[in-house]
Image 1 (cartoon, rainbow, N blue to C red):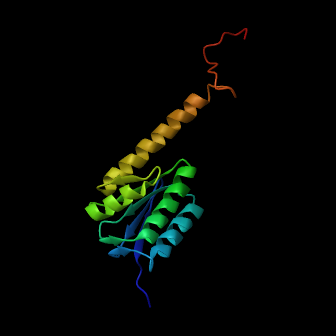
Image 2: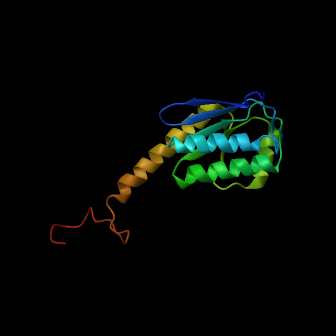
Image 3: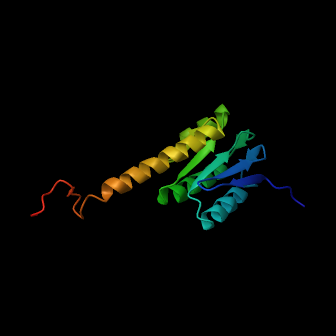
Length: 144
């Protein structure tokens, strides 16, 4: 019997994946992909992956994080990795994963998600005043 390698915490606006193992590698990266798919099916587009205990990550782990980031950002959400381990942060920086957010604490990740949601809401409101050509019609007179 295998022990659970992650713990999920879900609330209204984001899900937290607490990685319990010391490695995110070929032998267990599929667990992360399964967790992300499960959360996405539950309509979570904001996820925090806490890698505080992780000391070793290979290309498979990086690939799983790349996929999770793409899934979230395609839905205007945010995928945040939490780690203070220099080797892990450096590995993710070198991978140049587009739109990946790396933070030091879960709370910073939560703040980043709320800020992202606010930015999306603000963009939605400004888009409501533009037509299909991107022209802002809010200042046009009645006759137009």
